[in-house]
Image (tube, rainbow over all chains, first blue to last red; front, side, top):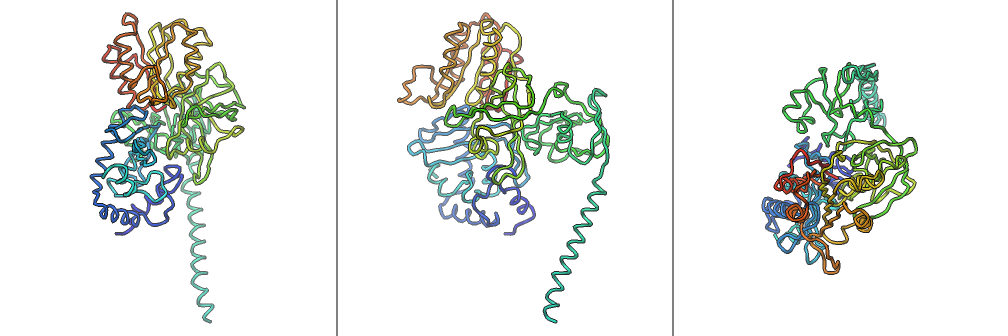
Amino acid sequence: MWMTPEFRKAQENMQPGVITADGFLGDETRPIIEIISADEERMAQLGIEFEEAAARMRRVIDEGRKGLGEPITVDGKWVVRVDEARGFLASPFEDGIFRKVNAVVSRKEDPERQLLVSELSLHLFEKYHFCQGKGSPFRLDPDRLRQVLDL
Amino acid sequence: MELATVLVAPVALSAISAALAVLISVTDKIVNNYGEVAIDINNGSRSLKVTGGTNMLVTLAESAIFVPSACGGRGSCGECKVKVNSDVGPHLPTEIPYLTNEQLEENIRLSCQVKLKSDVDIEIPEYLFKIQQYQGVVERIRDVTHDIKEVYFKLTDGEVDFKAGQYGQIEVPPYGKVKGPTQRAYSMSSVPGDSNHLEFLIRLVPGGIVTTYVHEHLQEGHKMKIIAPFGDFYVRDTDAQMICVAGGSGMAPFKSIFYDFVGNGMMDKRDIWYFFGARTKKDLFYLDELNELQEKYERFHFIPALSEPEESDKWEGATGLITEVLDGYLRDTIPTSIAKEGYLCGSPGMLDACMAVMRSHDMAEDKIYFDKFA
């Protein structure tokens, strides 16, 4: 796969301070296409489909919305807090705008096993298989997904 | 001979690059020099002469006319809408997602996306003329919960005139990897009578540019720009019972409203029911202050509710989601014979859920006032 102009522009938009404070790349300097390839490989090794993981996250987040901004226990095993802040975030691929909805999903028995998912990060995961760079607070790391979401 | 050959290519490349840079710079000065541009506001109500070439949001702000913008002109909030009666070109792809079909037809534009190239006629709400920019110095900053800070600013260059419930925009300077100043909107929690100060309750949003700055960098003595007041969330002057609902930093406008009532003697004039939702006791704050108000004022009723209290909380108050608690009170406790108004502050999901409960108890939708995204 190649870094198309669309991906090059997205990589620029993912730098810290352009769309969000921390950006989307964490500590990574690799082209995003390499990050995507590596994560696709890891997801395949773990036997997790992107669609399956995205659907699980959406369901947990939808249940978490019932907490109306406060944490709520979902299915007896996750504590989920869904927050919404004023305004929108643009996708770094410039293919839409997304409400600033953040969900903190943690295991009830082990709150350290936690995922931070936003409406935007879920879109990037689902559409581009972009899990974000290592070190990004919103990275949807394949191994972490398995640990937290029982995939 | 070989050295000269090696040097020719980079020197020639550098010369060509320099020539191109000069050409671009000169072209930019010629092509993008729009000279003086006239802005007519509200059919002659105000006229400005400005230098063209910059976007309308920034140009108006430089003339002390502050159009609301929660994102500070980054094209991501869709709040800086202005009606443009002149031809400024077609809507940009960056504007269209934020505009309804009716707004597109009326040539409503996002002022941050419209570059001023020639004279324009625009229409904006008259109240925008009252909005001003202030210099704030952090006089006090403290944690009220594990993720909410109370920030109290002293205004050093003027007094602010606002209605309790309205919001302001604060601007944080560049920091860390954030290259430019960034603005975000927050409800004021101070009272209008304290016109030399503004207070905000700011909840940490993971990854948020402004909230991260406030929670990790802001200290007493720091200076910030504040633009205020904005918004139409304020108390209507009626005798109706006020049914108020909030959670988290949605506390801010209500703190302002209740203490404003205390100051102007309104606390005894109408019934107020204030529902505040949290998960556990550690997410609650201002409990002592609000309980004190309840003890002092017979018509003020404070109902904090925990959705998942922990055993260690030893909680004896209301439990359940705030919508369930609200539903129960509207059914069993709050008098049905007196008119009601709803006042809500929180996320869209919380607002929608509360409005559904209120409608189910025959509260009129046009009597429910709200401020989304506290």
